[in-house]
Image (cartoon, rainbow, N blue to C red; front, top):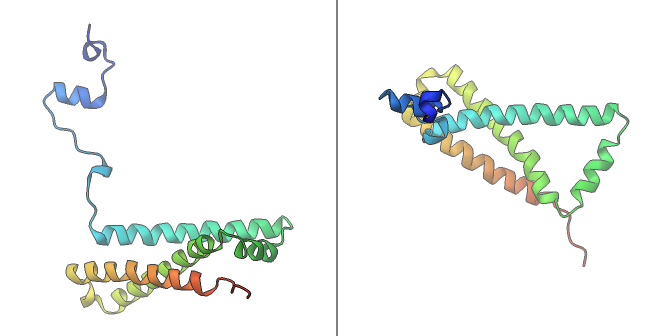
Length: 142
């Protein structure tokens, strides 16, 4: 007795046996840049909230957030850590500015302009974040 007859077949197998197509999973789709930009805006907001909550929890538990930040800032992981803080801040701020413009000037909300502004937002946020992370690195002593 085969898996389909026993009722153990996967959903895909059952649909194939009935001649029905199965929609591909979300990972099979190529998202437009506007969708990627929107998702990134939401993810950076969540990351900022979680980060702020973590800093608050450490502080409430009696931890020294300043000393933790200073030790992380002088460690070999400093550039990555600084970029990890700078990118969500810069991206979310610039994304909020873009949405404010769309709210105040709705005629700027056209498909081609949204696509161009999405690429610009990602590029500017990345370059600015790399610059902020690099600019705040400790100077090497001679």
